[in-house]
Amino acid sequence: MASKFVFIASSMLLLLCSSAMAQKTASPPSLSPTPAPAPAPDYVNLTELLTVAGPFHTFLHYLVSTKVIETLQNQANNTEEGVTIFVPKDTAFSSLKKPSLKNITNDQLKSLLLFHALPHYYSLAEFTNLSESSPINTMAGGPYTLNFTDVSGTVHIGSGWTNTKVSSSVHSTDPVALYQVDRVLLPEAIFGTDIPPTPAPAPSPDIAPVADGPGDEGTAAKSPTSSTSQGKSASHRVTSLGFLSQMVLAVSGGLAMFL
Image (cartoon, rainbow, N blue to C red):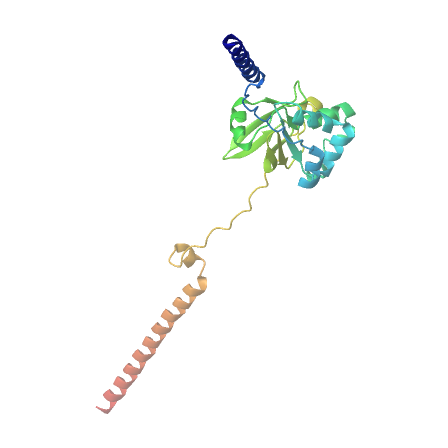
């Protein structure tokens, strides 16, 4: 009877231990939380930026008509480098007389537009380093390079045919930088190296000499009226003295006759 009781107690204890082991095995392991993925950068719409940013309708028209806007859009959003674009104002195109963009081919127009873009995002502060590394390759590739100089914080750009400067920052947030320029950048690779000389500045107007002071010899030479009046005064004094002398002699003669 006692052995039967021990057998039952042992069986129950074995069942309890097995159940506890099974629950321990079935519990899932604790895992550290997975960090959330970094948010994707916002898509930059260059067409929208250029439409609302300023008077860049002519430049945007050329970008869209040649589909160069798609190349720049891809560089901005699908690469790690970003893009920097120099955007001429509408007046820069309207004032462009010679050479004219009407005489170039469609492929040359595409190259000219890509000539206004660098395949990297540059803030204004980084142009100091660019001035030390000039010439800089543009997205047009090959011989289409630009020269940069930093003059007291103002960025100047030279293309051979064109010398201009960055007049304002339109948009400067990585991965896209848009900088306004006052002239269209004309590459030598299209228009050649026979660049007309820059017209000389207009001569300054002649400045009349300052008149001499009243005590200078020039004043005396230029004032004959004063000399004449002084001569007349002296002559008047001599005439008066002569008349008085004659009066004295006449009076003296009259007194002598009475004596």
